[in-house]
Length: 270
Ligand SMILES: Nc1ncnc2c1ncn2[C@@H]1O[C@H](COP(=O)(O)OP(=O)(O)O)[C@@H](O)[C@H]1O
Ligand SMILES: [Mg+2]
Image (tube, rainbow, N blue to C red; front, side, top):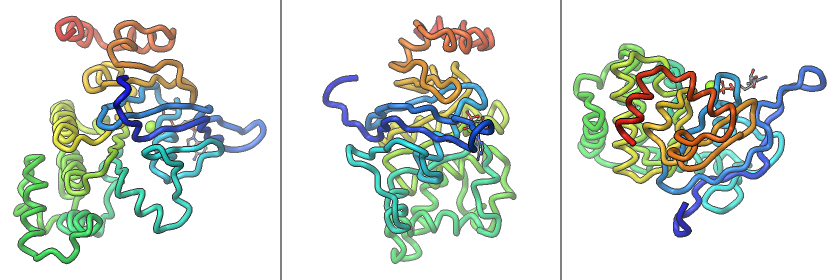
């Protein structure tokens, strides 16, 4: 990574331990990392390797057992509700299950209006708000006028994930954390969602942390890759180095498990 790149989010000796004694699970096992501004970082590992636990700590949804998180070089302080809300202007997430991400009683326009409010646009004239919501929806090829009176659960899984991206478009956080955002939608919508995520990154320059069990996908989208096994980061570096010249046996195994189609694709894109 070149010297002039700024570190956006980092952690030192970050750990999360659930339970006690013989029921203890070290979900995240004293990890260190530096994520740089504007880069797409993938965190790759099998189910149970600690990815979501790490994501929740980065988001401030659960407290680390040990270690520190730094945002833009300063130790993160989310000790009060107000500080947490400030932090969430900078980091936002898209989760695996789009159904769980919405309050079922909120219609789509109120979901989007909340984003405008969070960005300080609560007092904008109605016409301006409608224009912003229309733009955000058209960014992901949704028609705001057709959605305005609907509830999120009236949309398909793919449409809901696109709406999540429209939210991010309005919120413009410095960091987007996407935890397996395509694993519960069909293959066709999956490619579309990835394209929108990459388009969003290109337009906003935000740091994108992409969490996946699919190392082929990580190769396709990322600048840097972190490989997680049983809570530990076993290998990290530029995506090409890690995936084309893996050192850790675990990374090699993940690559061997990838369906053949990726191998052919890798060769044609390198
Ligand atoms: N709230 C919790 N209480 C106890 N154990 C948990 C909790 N959340 C996760 N774990 C355990 O931590 C480990 C990592 O889980 P998780 O972070 O969800 O992995 P991943 O997202 O990579 O599938 C697993 O062994 C899981 O059972
Ligand atoms: Mg998970």
